[in-house]
Length: 395
Image (cartoon, rainbow, N blue to C red):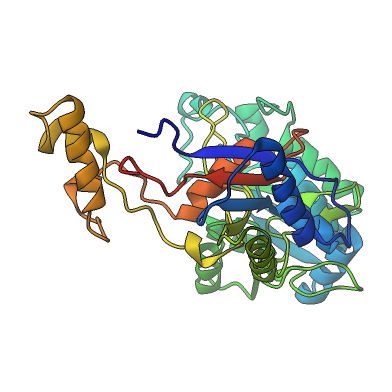
């Protein structure tokens, strides 16, 4: 019996710059890794490339002035409301600078005690102590400070209310904070609203429009076309962007479908194998200490080859061992389980023997594996090579 299942490797490559032929670099890096590590390539191996280097190669960057111009042009008003931004310096602060430069006053509605992805403004235990109901209570900044003081984030050491307030005012824009988890609260202050939430944005927009808003845009509506030659993303706009410099953001990459197709073609020419390819961003997992849900990108994978579509179709080995084959052991048990796997149905949904297997998209699972492997710091492995992901105990 083979002793190894899935194997994941972080693959190094040169530092990527705008204009680089990234598809060729990825192919060359995978081939060099294969030669160095004595890897034999197979059909259904997986190559994944972080979205950051795809966007870098594309030069998909934009300035805060481009954001300001787009916001001013699309709203056509000096005052807007912003609802449910994530409290992140890397993900949102530069976007906020651009937005603040495009208007004269912002009503900034924050969810509490945490944002959409789990960044906490304060310890939620304080709500119980103060008798605050987060489902109904609306707070202004003064009341918020009376109740919760000047709490700093556990990991970053930042008071995000103070930080966002100073940032907005430094752009010559007035700000008024509102703390409410009901999106339509903002309508008591303004009818022109920018929804800054990520995964709940469609619902927020629908509720605001039904509540009488005059104009509702989402972050994906800002820089969804180029402004003065700046980068853009037609599907996601500012969603998925990261801080590049104090005055620029790196946007989520464009045209990823063409990119993964070309990488797959180059690898096929070089290896003779059909290797699956995907672009990945944030993984989809939650930190048990900081309570942060990692997925600040709009999707885990903006593009992938067809072999990565769908969800796992797996049997739970411990269920088979404890139930169907409870009376077997040793080689007899192993053989029975392998035979069950070989003969499993093409769709195990609803089958008791599949309970407890992960009911998620393959690209979300694989993207999370890739994100944890590459990290977000100085590992220098923006390419991930995976073998044996689709193997099972019968192989």
